[in-house]
View 1 (cartoon, rainbow, N blue to C red):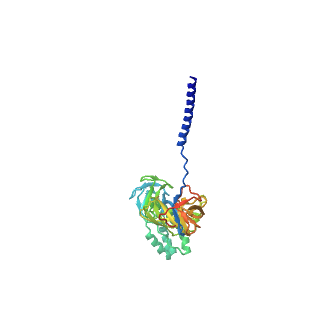
View 2: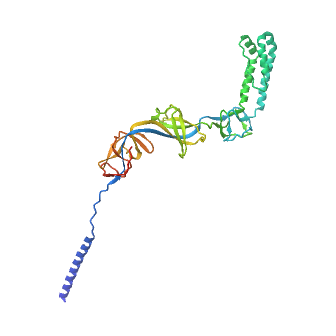
View 3: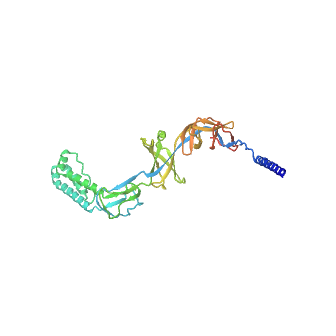
Length: 376
């Protein structure tokens, strides 16, 4: 009985030991070796440098403003009378055409009264002129004959003789005459005429409105010629010339216009360090307030290349390929646009990276794309 228990105990221990060894063997068989990472060689796009003359094109933008514009103000008071055309925005007027007429019946009567007084004064002088100055009486008689109360007062006859001038002045003729001319000038302000062919863009009053002196009535512009005001960096201020041709495009890029530099401000804006240039443009399809983009041909830079702006690193360096390895080259940026940059001091024949490479660094092993490349 004791012998049997001993044998069973020994067998149990053996089974336990065998189980442990079997488990270790199974675990060891499932352990896979860690793979060694393979070396990745990236493919890069390159260009072979060929320095050329690069035109520096300066982009600018702004909104069109009519070159000829008039703000209409009233210098007199009265009721706005209805004319042959409605005083509304968009209404066209020809040069010299009546835009606004203010009721001047009362004031016109006072002008007529002053003209009548002048006529009567000259008439009362005629007997004395015939007696004392018979040589000049004929021209004054002719002046009276040409005097029309319903027309503008004609200029007084010339008075080269000093005695004649004293005589006429002493009778109050000159004072009365210039008083009439002053009243006539003010009477003309009751009518506002178009100074040029154009369109009414703003109307602040309507027919029947009581207009007061100094009140703004509207705005009138010439639709034949416009100006585009653009801000240019002071770097190119000495390169702009009056009369230089400028290409303009609309916001959608569907239309192009030809303009010329008409004016250049001589003062540099202290905040933005820019100067203001005005580009004159004419086209029937243009409207005031349109947004246009201008391309100014500032200068030409010899022995330079133009690349994508994203290829230029922060420390003014670019990536080049030498013996399948990336390397850095110092360059000299000349001019930046929103998408590209003009560089100098890049020798001909150098192979540069033409597209950004993610994670690029100096000494990185690369493979050059064997497709067709383009020269700079």
